[in-house]
Image (tube, rainbow, N blue to C red):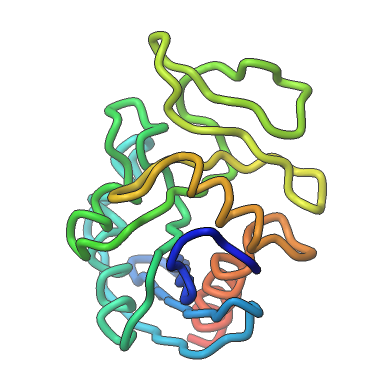
Length: 187
């Protein structure tokens, strides 16, 4: 992964659920996409799943996992940033809390329209403004990338693209997702 900026350590964070318990995992990878560090947490969750209000459910569990990491340069969050109906999704909330460059990566489009729905990469527009980009993963499935905090959309796209290997999510997020799911399955 050769990047034009100082993002040598890329982290990913994700949350999995069993009943009212959230199992969160945060993973840090280096430029070769080797895992350097993993942090997990278990949190009781009282806020129900409400579309568009994901932050109220996932912010606390994600932050608990992130607090176990020693350092990273940029964070990928399994959720939206600016490409959110309120312009401030989970990736934005976590970015403000951590004060780190944060990228939202989601599997489903919540708002906006694609400039070219059939292109492998295309801007997402809402009210005439570019709020993110659709990218195509190596598996052929779409992912929707947007600015979370302290980063440009161009850099978000560059980092996400550099972190794809064989999965439907960039590797730091895929690793966090797998750790969170493994944790929830063993409880």
